[in-house]
Amino acid sequence: MINIKEDEKLSVLNHSCAHLMAQAIKHLYPNTKFWVGPVISEGFYYDIDLENKKLNEDDLKIIEKEMKKISKDGKKIIRHEISKEEALKKFQDDPYKIDLINEMENETVISCYTQGDFTDLCRGPHVESVKEIKCFKLLKVSGAYYKGDSKNKMLQRIYGVAFYNEEDLTAYLTELEEAKERDHRKIGSALNIFMSHDLVGKGMPLWLPNGALIRKELENYIYEKEQKMGYFHVYTPCVGTVDLYKTSGHWDHYKENMFPSMKVDEEEFVLRPMNCPHHMLIYSNEIHSYRDLPIRIGEFATDFRYEASGAVKGLERVRCMCQNDAHLFVTPEQIGEEFKKVVSLILEVYKDFGIKNYKFRLSLRDPKDKEKYFDDDTMWNEAENKLREVLNDFGCDYQEAIGEAAFYGPKLDVEVKPAVGPEITLSTCQLDFLLPRRFNLFYINSNGEKQTPVVIHRAIFGTFDRFTAFIIEETKGAFPLWLAPVQINIIPVNNEYHLEYAKTIQKLLEENKIRVKLDDRNEKLSYKMRESQTKKIPISLIIGDQEKENKTISYRLFKSQETTTLNLDEFLEFVNQKIKNKD
Image (cartoon, rainbow, N blue to C red; front, side, top):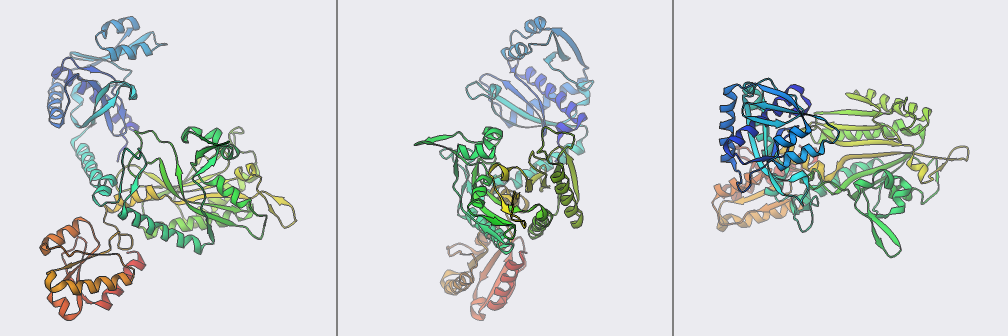
């Protein structure tokens, strides 16, 4: 989806459309007071005070009609400058504008824009006339606290979007509708995957039984792959002392993203935002030889990070998350080979999940910046060259981002383009020269001397939360057979005649570790089949007279009208192959 704020022409048009909307509202509701109306990535909004009038969708249509009427008049949009004193006098009846003017401490001249009978404070720029603003849509209205402070009055925020032609507007609105259909929050609620509750708190999702099954399958999937690659999995506490994060450096550089500390007896604890400090201590629990390395420590770890309440979103952006985290302790000579294995794992996982639209972003240091980066030119040059070599060997499409590395090492992000919306980062891989030094980690090299290892931080799924949100939206909740909470729905045509045979099939499938639901309600077959489709169950079995008599099953795949009949052995082979191959 296009980012309107980043397109200069569209940004100007949307800014002008916000003023057009404000003018129309002033015509319809003369006593309206206005706060601010900025351009955002999805268009624009304006915060307004309508006193006792609460707007609805029908009101937005009336405002749109008035906007079109004003646009046809074709009035010029004229910029003019006034002094602060003149501005205070001009807007003396609008406390919101007075507040804005009073905040302009260093400005002796204030710019305004006038179009016909409407004038508003604005830095601009704008289109030349309202006639240019033809293709627009008011999208929704919601509440917004004045200045974003819950202690202040609740205003009404109207969102809209504008384009230069109807084709672009229609395409954008179509994409918005597609995004609504794919919204993981809507699907997650309908399919009983997760929920939230104010008593638990914002950004603290509750995984329901169906969601727990999906998450467990994801955990099993990646756990098996990591075990085969020589990872050791651990469990560590969800809290750590403040001293732990002072040692790691997170307390100084990441404190604003952490929850407040809490004192217990003589210790001060904090909910952990990441797991690397715990894993450093696990490594230090034993003395290691260079022959022991690489050591790969993995964990499905629950972490807590502060997100503003307005930023949290379903499973996609949360305050409590579970990371598919791992830390690889390697010698400098092993960086290239271990990095190669991480990239190989990422590509393997993306293939299994059908993720094709992605790109690699390699964040490197700026060699001219001697203040920001850990000072070891040889280490940086060798590490960065090894990472480039690996990506080139795989033929990966990647871009280099100079100056965007962390202080302690270069980083690889995999940016994925979802079915709707902007790119998101799923997988990450970060080299770290600094943290092992902070924790005084070492191994004994071939000369019998202590040497500091390099740590590779990596997360293949990122978090299970965000990855699940991504998969929900990619599939619209129609999960592949291996991942679906209910894999097979058994529907007897008539309970009196067919239920016992249906139960026999249920037992057989369950013995083969297939997740089955038996729909034995006294409802019509057509009703049960529709509900099976609504719940997006991959396979529905229809059990009637012929199936019972011939000891067969008849099945339909999700979204298919075709019915296939197989004997039980053939069906088991069919299902097991689909699960094994992750079709």
